[in-house]
Image (cartoon, rainbow, N blue to C red; front, side, top):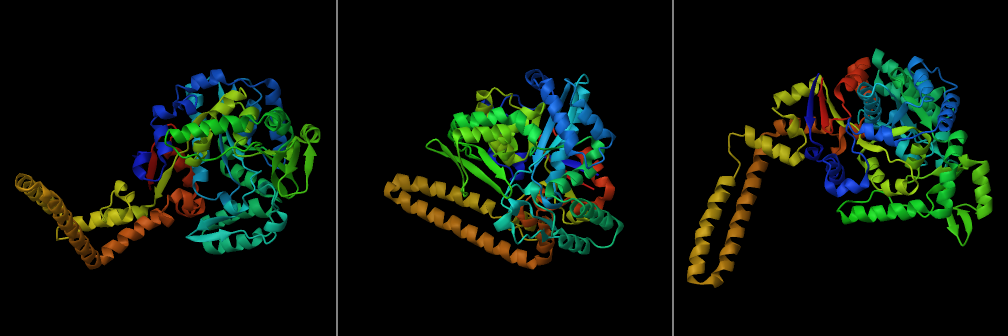
Length: 534
C-alpha cells in the first residue's frame, strides 16, 4: 500500500470556500473560532464547559438507545467515560443512507475516531469519545433510499412514501427491503466476502424494524471495536435539555437575525451561501409529518396541515413534549453542541460551509463554537487499476485533469507527430510585433487591420492543431479508450469516487483489511486529499 497526497485546490473538486478555509485565509477568520490544529485543542478544552447534570442525562439517553445491542467493551467504556468531567467528544454526522450510502461515510467516521486517538496522545489527562450523530429526523427519503453497486443504482422503493411517510426517515419501517436484499446478494456473487456483506445487510435491515435501528446496528457492527458512540437526537431526554433554546428560537428568532447577517458577510467576501435561516428554524414532528412552524399574527401554524397553536399552547406543548419539535439545518448544530461535551465537528465541504454561517448565532446564545474540520477525502486505487495506470504512464496528478486535457496531453506525449503549435504561435506573435511597429510608423489607422489579421491567423493555427489532435486520437483510438476507461472507473459519473461508490465494492477487493488500511492512511489533521494505492 502506498499513499500520495494532493492539495485540495489542485483536485478541482472542492469549493473556493473550503480551499480558502483550509489555507486559513484572513477573509474567513470572523466565521469560526479556533482553527483545528492539535495545539489549538488546548484552547477549545478550556472554552468548553459541560455540567454534570447534562452528562448524566446524556449517558442515560445513550444507555436507553443501546438497549437492544450488545455494547462491547470499547463502547461501554466510552459511554461510562462521558460521565466524567474530563471527557469530551469529537462528532461527525450523516444521513441514514441505505447500506451506508457513498463511501465517504467510512471516511467521516474514521476521521473522527482517529482524531480522538490523536487527542488522547496529546492530552493524556482527558478522554475523547468519537461520536456519530445519526440524522434520524431528516425527511429527505429520496436522498437516502439507494446506493450504487457496480455502476447500478440499488434502490429501496416505497410506493406509500408520498402519501404516508413524510415524517422523520428514522421512523420508517424497514418493510420492503427483502427485495433489495435479494438484488444485492445476486449482484455481489457467491464468494465468502460477498456472503459476509449479505449477512451484514440482512442482520441490519431484515432483523430491525426501523431505519434508525438498522443504521445504528450497521454502524455499531462496523465500528464498535473502535469505541464509536452513536447518538440519536430524536430523544425525549435530550430534547428536554435543548427545550430552553427551542423556546428562545420560537419567541426571539435569534437564529434568523444572526445567520442572515453572517450569510451577507460571506457573500460580500465572495463566497456562496449554503443555507438560509428561517424566522423559526424548527419543525413540528409527529406521526408521518415533519413540517415547518410558521408564525402569523401571534398564532403558530404547522405548514401544509390544519394544525395550529396559540403562543401559550405551543410553549405548553414544547414543555410537555419536546420531542415533537425538530431542529432544522440551522438549529441542529446548536442542539448537538448543547447536549454533547463536544470540541470539534468533522464534516464534508457542504457541511462546513453552512457551519461557517453559524458562529455569530452561537455567540448570541452563548454556546461555545466547535472547531470545524473537513473530513478526510480519498481515492482508492486497486492493484489492477494501478497496473493499468503504469502501462499507460499516467501519474496520480494526471488523473485529476479534465478528461479532454488528459487525453490531449497523453496524445502529444505518445504521438510520433508533435501536435503542439506553441512554437509556431510564439513565432507568429513575434512577426506581428514587427508589423505593429511598421504600421504605427507608417499609418496608425492600419493597427486595427494588423490586429484582425493576427487574431485570424492564431485562430487558424488553433483550428489546425485541434484537427491534427483529433486525427491522432482516432489513429491512437485504443490508447485513448483505455485512458478514458480507467479515469471513468476512478471518477464514476465524472465525480469523486467517494461520492458515488459504496464501500461494498471495496470490501470485495480488500476484505477485512479495508477498515484497518483506511485507519493507517487517513490523518484528519493533514488537510490534503489522499490517494491510496493497494
